[in-house]
Picture 1: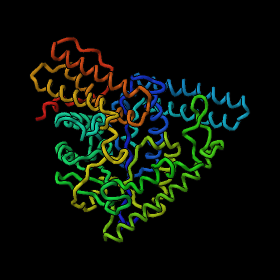
Picture 2: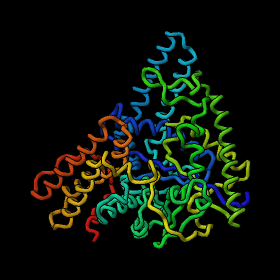
Picture 3: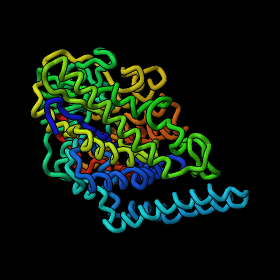
Picture 4: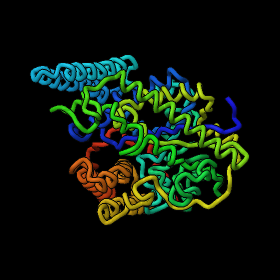
Length: 484
């Protein structure tokens, strides 16, 4: 494969808010259980089989929960996969049989077997799902802020340091070698963020500059060297949109499984076109789309090389949970992309590898996110004002308590963990989108109340309430709260 045109960097951003121990159905631990069975285990299989150079971001808060699967949390997971999941598949299949829809019933039973297979895989590794990632292929493992906080919206340098130090410390302990790759939560950038990243050893992060550069601009194919020495790698949204759009992306093909229409217990035995789901037909579609994706990536890189006279870096990033959950055939498509890249002569590289051999440019970066309207409104608007206020107020009070000379001990540790949970970007995101009913508001209220209780205990030497955050931030960098 020629490097004259440059390389395609596939970036998978894996993230889950802390739901372990916080409810089950319809909101709570079931999110994590479904992701393990339908996304993470199938992804591990693809990566182990292909040995492809993929950049895989694993947020610390996701790892906190995956790490807990070697204990009681893993027993609850396999119990769900072999119990609840098998029961609802069986009930809905029997119901379809009673109405004469035997082909649909057979598809429900086939899909149910996948959950039993996932339970067997978890037993085989002793619940060590993190270890499967570590051993799966030529991966560049990236970390992120401890609980996926939107860094430009934090109220203090100490709050930013707590998120960065805690997240990076846990990644180093779990995976050892870290090359400095960092997923900026929600790709939320404002000038100055790169200084904090540089201070904490970050070398590379992704950024969305679609608004400032324009969709399709070739400038998206060149990394940017910031004044802090950290390299920002633009995401090429023109390429991302081939996959990640509601109406026109590959997942909208009528041959794929319909995510939105299901049986009584939300089984999905139908394709988007209303036919009974056919795995073979969907496989053919995934192969076609992989071939098209690789061809378009080559054309994009060739256009850059022809105009600029040097190789480009084409970065395509999306949430890992798209592959297998929202888009059931996503893992099949990813495997086919890797195969098609070899067949068509497209080099795949990790972001770290590609940056090391690509001369970055120097230009200003615009404030941005990859959220709605490419700005901060999803996490900072009148609709989520109360959530934003609770998080910032809690941060300032926790920092003040940490620097006041009060005895630190368990009360401050508890306050810091509740603060990290409160700062998660997921709760305002869900509120902005009207998702998960009352769950995000309840989580915000619960963590804010627990933070208040911990600070009160710190001030008055009262007993510290029992924590419900069992394995959140086990590598808590409490000293960060004293950052000047």
